[in-house]
Length: 183
Image (cartoon, rainbow, N blue to C red; front, top):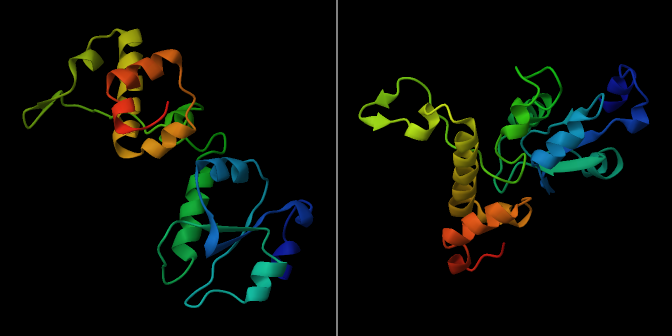
């Protein structure tokens, strides 16, 4: 199958990543999605049931990826997840050029909460700052919310986040050192 695909590839096949989904692979993340999005073409190998022949993994795959610490019945859905994460990083796939740059994991922070209309939903209000029209305060609120969500849900991400002095001061004010985490 790989040999037949190599004849269909427009670019130099030796430069095309051959991605094998395998529980032994490195965990797929946003950084890898960005790297794969920079490639003109990608070949995906997704095995079923017991996987693929070990010789394919050793001799043909150039990158082995895992979606996490679980096993599925086949690699088809995993391949689709990777294709979706990679495709959305290609210019023109999303509505605005900056859309993907503000998503969770793009800056090692979880994205701030999103709100839509109506302003009041079952007694729960949109935060008033978001309705204020003060863009500077809205951006500050969003940044603080991202920091809080990351600190409380995925503190491991903060180890790689690019934190400003203001970010660090905010995290300190929220008890970050009390949680035995470094900033």
